[in-house]
Length: 268
Image (cartoon, rainbow, N blue to C red; front, side, top):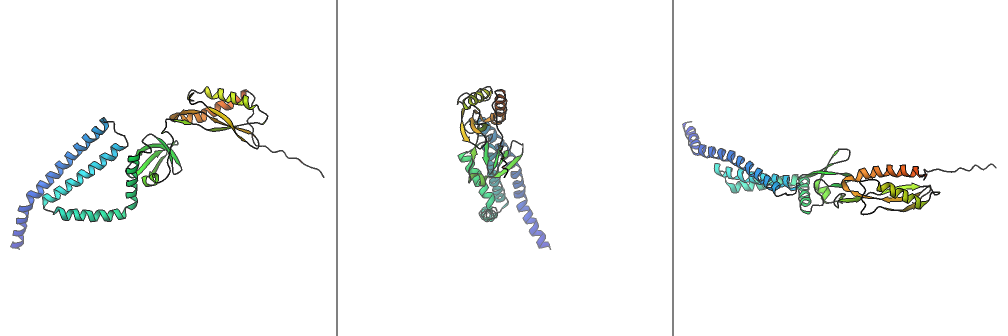
């Protein structure tokens, strides 16, 4: 018993200073890392870096510094860093195999940040969803739809499939089909529609709106109306112009037909 007590006291005398120093180093290290990360974030903001990159780089830098700190603290206690790194590598391999999907999402996020097919604030269409990019995280992209719904799409899915960036060019064309009756004057209808469109302040004068016959349908002559607007005004123009056109056509006695069928009854 005395032998065990003696060994315990010797170990306590040997490792207590190291353990105390390691704890102090860990606390100070975490505090210094938080200061470094805050300075790093302020530097990125001051340099007007892409808002998409700031949280990603901040998180990545924080984890790298913390891992280095933990390895340093472990070596101070007396743990062999070579074996520690080997165990860490083996654990990393096991975790990597278990989390292949998450790692592919991480790789997809890195590709999105490098090639930048879209950025925060853009309106995109992907996987059948249309929404405004709220945030590009390490593993997911978060969209906000026009119904104020939050859509979370894995980065691996977005990076490996087609993406439609609706707002990347700044302006967008609003295509709408308007039907008029076969009895109506096409030239007159075009002039009425053109005049109604140009009254809308959000419709751009350059590029100019085009109007053309798109189809000779069963019950109507379908005109394709193509005004341009800024991307942010898309829905205002989409709904507002349709209403203006309907009122203008009614005022000028131009009929917008509806499907109808003539039935002939033959008496034998």
